[in-house]
Length: 167
Image (cartoon, rainbow, N blue to C red; front, top):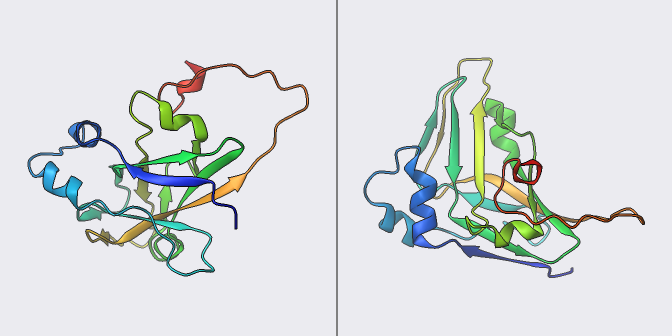
């Protein structure tokens, strides 16, 4: 296996900023200290599990943006794709709002420190609420190699995520 990336925490300041617009409240330092870096569950797992930093309950149709407190330093030529954990998708239709999260290697250097945010919606058609307990794996990231065209001339500089390269 190629070792092409490293997960790290963002700074405490960036973590607090990430939670500010969704009611972060008090106790952010304690949550920050307990952030678990993504890990694979087994040696045959492709996905690195992302863990909830606090309890989350989503009613049917409800959406939440989850600041993970995580960033990924990724070698050029690789991308991190984020998906919901398959069990949550299967049982609750828990879905990422952008279908698949794409974390490019240059996102690490953004002014937000490459803070990975995961926005999810409970699309349950059966009226099921979903509870994700603190410390529970709720999403998974898979590193994939990619290529570019022979006449590629991209020279833009990223600063941010969620559509920042088209601003």
